Length: 172
Image (spheres, helix red, strand yellow):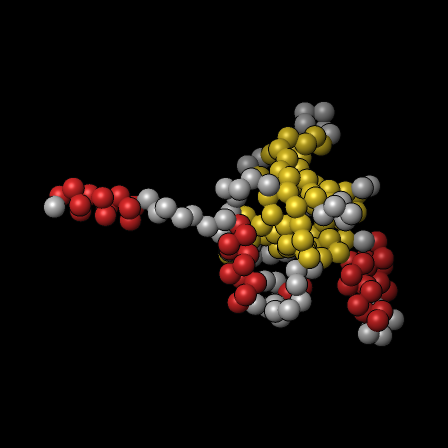
């Protein structure tokens, strides 16, 4: 009897199935819980054990939508300039829970550079490189070195896919 109870206790303490980023995404998508404003593409890390994914939309998509619907011309000049400059909005999801804010990346050569920030006294930023032909991405964490230049220290790689419009998603 004690052996049987021990087996049950171990089974409950160590679940056999752990969810992946894809599982969390599928749950949110089916429930319409993705951030509709930043959900043109969903991106998944190549590491199978990852439970994090992100979604994104580019300014080109938003600009084209506004032009097609006759709303671009009515925008203030500053908003038009921002759309013309180019940006990428992302929303990161950790175990299916959205981060509280979107991240905004601006065009930086062939990549998208995030805002420089300081965490624990260390200046850093995230840099995304996304191939729209293959939908492969690299997400680099860049640190400010002693000679005041940014260098990539940590990179993750993965694949993106278009989010199907079949299920309407949440708007914030």
